[in-house]
Image (cartoon, rainbow, N blue to C red):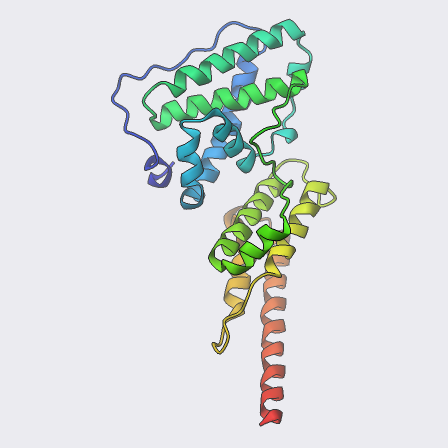
Amino acid sequence: MNNNLANLFKKANGRETIISARGLEGTAQLNSVASGIVDAILRHINEHADELAELVAESQKSHDAMDKLINECYELKTVNIEFLKALNAKTLEGMLKSQQSKRSRAKSKIMTLDNYRNMMMGAVAENLIRSALGKNKTAGARRVGSVEYTDEQLEELRNDQDKLRKEIRNIQSKKSIMKSKEGFSEDNEQWKKLLEDEEKLKALRIPVRGVAVDTTKWQLAEMLEGVDISALKAADAKQLLQQALALIKGNAQQEEQQQDKTAKAQ
């Protein structure tokens, strides 16, 4: 984890202690699963530190904000929790109380990165247990793929192009997270909803009048947003390159047609 994320937290003074897992059945496996999820979330936050700084700061003080941040960065519905569902309700209730206490204790400490990670682990674990119990929280969390815009919000975004660009990047980030999950399918309804929202927002973009805008650059940047080029398979890399070339040729052709129209008009 580089300094982007570390800068959002206080420095450790050496007195913090790690909260040890208790002996409830299933706790060790739960902690292992939660740890992997937290690592993925922190990597995502680190890559989008500027965009998420405000929510990260809020999540250090509010459990609801922490739950919202988790749902912004990770789709918990994709996690296999059959090992939790196999446990009886009494055990799950005990685990739930334990994780809630873990979150509260961490929240009361100096908010170093290690302590924040520990608090997020408790939050992730709590939400997974709630799913197993059928007690999902409904308030405060906006899940990946469930973005809904009112007409007023769309108009506000149209009038604030910087905010619009940020919202588009936010959706592209969600797409990147979903696409990286095991078992991802483009037939997923949440994926289709993200694509729909992305196109809806892109339609609100306003080109600057009287200024030649090189659309190819930002279109290529959007295409590559969230793509880990070093991890691409040969077939995926070839497909991505073909799409980029098609975009460049298409824009060049449009520019030539526009120049021809301008020349004829003169």
